[in-house]
Image (cartoon, rainbow, N blue to C red):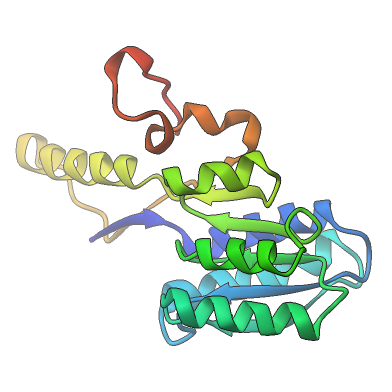
Length: 196
């Protein structure tokens, strides 16, 4: 059994958001880990399928495989930004967004290229605050763990069957709701804000 965010929904959500941020006929890029990885491939496919439905004529100009290596991702993104001067957006389908943020900053394109990332951690905060990151698709790892434990407990205590797959809905993180997420505010009980 697996508990996770549906990767195709993750990608389509990012594609719909990106399409609403851009002008028609915009060119975007996707940065992923490896297309051989099913999760990464499905996110890229979902994004690529939905983007032109929400932004007429928009297209994915390039898909970069960064192999979750920060140096490789940074170098490939700097090269991408030099080759595509009119690039309007980038979707990072894995957690490896910091080298993309640094590449945007280093080439003077931060805030000009719409950047949608995946997941959430404290090092991303300055990039939300300065407008480099416009949104992130949060896969809620803590909630995934809680849901998995609930499935096991329901199975052990109530003999309920464990489904082969439990897909969870991702959350959209913007600068306006950033502080409400556990990864940013910490796990203090007094500051509890429930986000599903």
